[in-house]
Length: 267
Image (cartoon, rainbow, N blue to C red; front, top):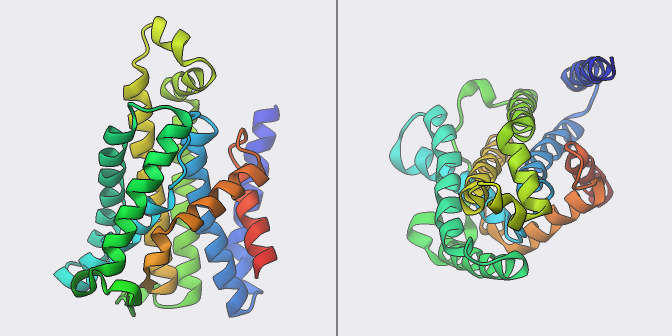
């Protein structure tokens, strides 16, 4: 019964969010879109931080990688934007895999410190590679499909993609893999003794989290039609971490609440 009530309230909340653009000015529609994508970013971080116990201190680098991956494919290759929207998260997942392979032998604080260093290196490359990434100017006016050209359309894109991503992550957390990940968080030594491959589970969790951070980056490209190096900077990672802490990093929708509180207060 309790689970049924949760689903009912979830559908009611989703219906309310679908109706929001009908009565809000343009600025608040934009703000709602930003809250959705930052909430997705924070939830993807919480997948490895709250449920996996992995000290991921530079999660924003995957958010920026997804955004830059999509924007560069659109502006440099001439491929359709819909293909770029898929490539962006895959770029973020690949970067997460590479950084994960380097950092995973370390544990806790040392993992986070090395990840900050590697993420800062990626940011420096993006910041200084003017001929390819636009350097500190970023990329502005990313061409998008006509169907996504209005603020309302961008909001609905953000709402649909965020909702589907949250649903997939929720299923992952409730799966046997998610249970094993939480067991590793609570006691990695005991988990390894009962036959769980700790490093493999952690690495897979990092790749999944990086992928959905890249999805959040793609949503930003759709909402704002621009990308810039600060999207990969470590200060955004710390802000995302605060969103998880504020909303509650042991609850699935807590990071969404934390993102909403921080963005509304800042605005």
